[in-house]
Every structure is written in structure tokens, then in C-alpha cells.
Length: 242
Image (cartoon, rainbow, N blue to C red; front, side, top):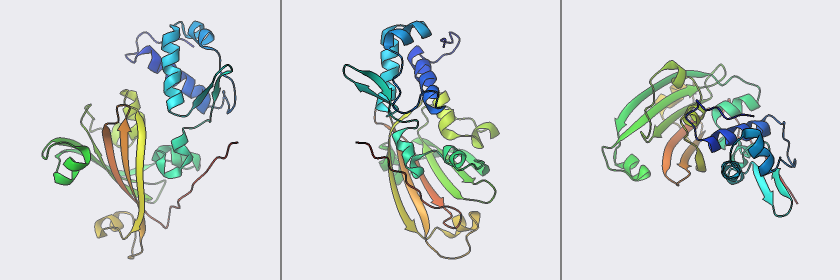
């Protein structure tokens, strides 16, 4: 395990990603004691301060847990947030079910915030926001998502971005989420959205509003997603530990 000196990411972020990969690939399994800070420092050829900062982030993200006098162990192989299906990224959720995470249609534009969006993001009316609209599903449409993002980085209007993973792209730009809030309800979707999702009646559909905050608790993303209830079911996995 070596640090890439040509990578613009801080050393601790590179270490964090390397350790996270070991956890998510099951190389380090739940309950495993990971190497000591000293061992990791020697392995990555970085300071123990760098190792400690990377581990602290993974502890905050619920990948690792520290036990006084014992060491640091793997808490679980996915983030606590992804124990709940709706809080995963769509890409991860489809992969979990063995399905392709296809984007069937996508559009990105820069808009001016109306009063509702300004209140949500606590910005001024007329301030710029990115608006990403996507229809997604393995073959037939499963969901329509309407995403708003603060323009803290430039987002490319390219097929690679539009049809790829939003969260993977943000992570590549060192943007990570520390907290999510979600609100789920059942409502009749607007006719335009029902047409996109190939829903031909007035039956209630699952609607999810997600608020995604960075490590300074600033709202970065707001998304409202409509799910085709004929092609999607809500699933929850709850882990019990003594």
C-alpha cells in the first residue's frame, strides 16, 4: 500500500479510500482487528497523524470502531447508511440486487433558485444551482430523480457524468457526505412523471426526499425521487448486536 504522490487528494484521503476498499471488498471482515497505527504508518510511509485522521473518518462513517486497550476493528462492511436500501446510491442498490444501474435518460442544467429552493439550501433567491434530472432502471424505468446541487464544483454536462454514478463523481472531487435526512411518503405522481415511469393509473407511488450534508453540515444535495411501485419495493435490513 503506497501513497500516490501524483494524486491531488490529501494523503489521509488516499489512506481512507485504501482502508475503505479493504473493508468493502471483505478483505477485512466485520469484527476483524485492523493493523495498528504504527503498522499502517510504515505500510503507507506516512505519519501516524495521517493514519489517525483517515481512521477517524472511517469511524465517523461507521466502517470502523475503536475499543480502548484493544484496537480498531471493522464495524461492518458497508456504511451504516447503506443498511437501509433507500439511503444507498442507486448504483450500489442495483449492484446489490445483481442488476445493472442503467440511466435511461438524463439532463443537466444550471438554474436560478426559486424561493422554495432558496429556503431549502439557505441561499438567496436567484442564486445558481445545478439541476440534474434522470430516469433510471435496469431495462424499464424504476425511478425519476430530480436533484439540486450547490455549485461548489463545476459539473460537466457529459455522457460520462450524466449516465454514471453521481456520488462516485463527487467523491472523485473530494466531496463526501457526513449525514443524510430522508422523508418517504406515498403519493400520486404528477402526470408528466407517471408518463416517464410508464405508470398508467392513479395509484400512489413511493416518493423520497433526500437531504445530503457534507462534513461541515452544509446542505450540498437535495433530491426528490419518484419510484415506480410496480417495479420497486422498499427493503430494510436491520442489524442487531449485543
